[in-house]
Amino acid sequence: MQESITIPDIVQAKNQRKLTMLTAYDYPTALLVDKCGLDMALVGDSLAMAVLGLDDTMSVDMDIMIHHAKAVSRACKHSLVIGDMPFLSYQLSTEQAIHNAGRFLKEAGVDAVKLEGGEAILPQVQGIIRAGIPVQGHLGLTPQSAGQVGGFKVQAKTAQAAKKLIQDAQALEQAGCFSLVLEAIPAEIAAKVSSEISIPTVGIGAGADCDGQVLVFHDLVGLFEKFVPKFVKQYDNLSESIQNALLKYKQEVEQGDFPDKKHSFAADKNILQDLDK
Ligand code: KIV
Image (tube, rainbow, N blue to C red; front, side, top):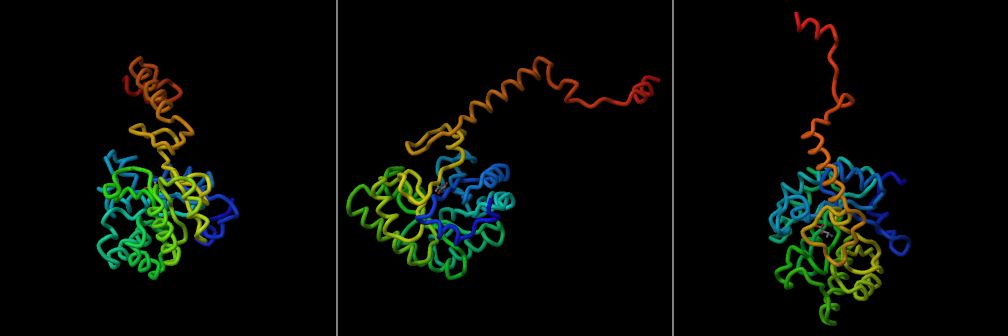
């Protein structure tokens, strides 16, 4: 396996090979993502829902994101680590955006940051890139502004919205983004966006013609049961396997079968004799 994935590796993958990206929020998960050779590990703000039990992504802040990103960076030797800029960490000003993107690199050791939005946040994207920090764009369904687009719905369903999407994608490419996440977009429209720009697109609910794919780790392994979007393929049902293990443990403890001799330490016989004196 190649040592570590770089930004040029991601950019050059377009039309050569499909890119793989998965979320990771902690050290053991990131170790697995890295060991399996995925190109990118995204410390997504989806951690709010997947591991913190919150109802949306809005209430996580930079301190929480950095806490998780540190653990992921520690684990990843191969995968490129991307820190997801949380709600209100870049919307207020370009200065704020550069400051927080810088925190992600300096404090958490990530390789790049991801921001949601198109032309509306172009000054922030340009500022971060000018500061030398690689940026991944994110268009289509952008959960931080889901309220504005009527909830968690498929985007770019009209010709006008699709044109705006292409315009935003081109603006982000021109600003210097190294790749672009496309979320919840009809497959044909995502294919069109992918063919109109020279940077790779990474789709989630955006069909097979994107240049790569991303999923939330907990969705992929069947560890998030609250809701399963149409675009999620569950490759495993870890929730069931873990519950089976926990129930077996509970039963064995209650019945006195665990711990057995194999999982216990034996005292030296002399000590036992001394104790009885
Ligand atoms: O936060 C996240 O996990 C994301 C992905 C869905 C792309 O932004």
